Image 1 (cartoon, helix red, strand yellow):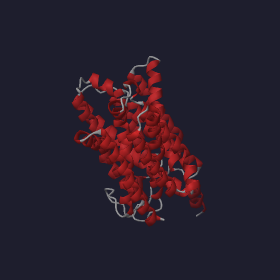
Image 2 (cartoon, one colour):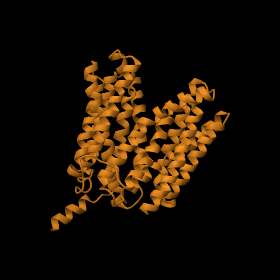
Image 3 (cartoon, one colour):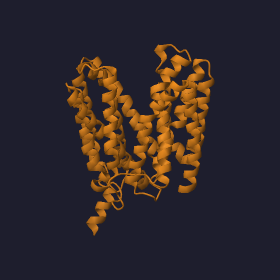
Image 4 (cartoon, one colour):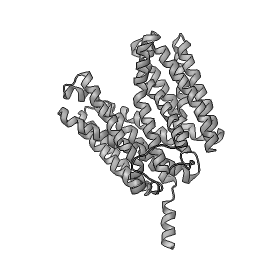
Length: 388
């Protein structure tokens, strides 16, 4: 009995589990950012045209959607430590394979496998995050999600440095893989050996009850994030007449605002409460869209992008935190279900905006995004009434 109590005490989440969770979020962002510079080289090496490349890149999303519904069951059965360790090693391995693949027919399964391992990492690290935050009893989720963004910035920056130093793309990818493995060796043993309750876990994570509403909120949040990534540059250059050299500055400001707010989001949520942070923050984001639609000079346009980033930054982290307080589903299954809906938002957001713009124009598309955020406020108010 005494040995059992000592073991349970050792496994109680604390500082090292927090650091391990941040490391895994970093790995997720770092891996996908290390893949981005390889895409043009991948296109050249396989002699692909833009249409075929676009179809191939869909394999990453397809692979992720295969494993995401199964991730909650895997975490509950085997624990976050085993699932994240295996998934992150596969993630790194398939990243290295993508830097070497030479044929179209080999590229398809490798891209699917890369996406599948990425989806498994994404869902399981969020399960780990919810469990750690719930056990520690303080707000941590915004800081956890901030490390995904830190990983993205680090991956893009370090890859550029390695190439500048004269390393071949395969060698630079090898350096990225070594860094991922080093983080796993350093922090993997501090990951949770469990992944939530095993009872009531089904093969596929299907949202129900209040979890469905939380999933819709996260989906809407990711629709806006995806639209900012793919359409902010087009909006600035084609509708606002901004020089092409500055096309990426709007998204850069949006990303910087999101990162800064997520780094301070836990403190802010602890002081003001998640309800205030989400409802008022989303209101700020709506105001940012209004500013984008009405502004006629660059500083005001930049202010609009910055406001959207500030307002949207903590929507997803705050609602992932709420999953630890709902009773409708086991935590592992709830996180998996919400992650699937969020990922669907990421994939469909740019396409929906493009469809609306094709039928009308980007002003209507961006106005539609503002209306989605208004709908998010309404749904969020309902969720807080039910959960709290």
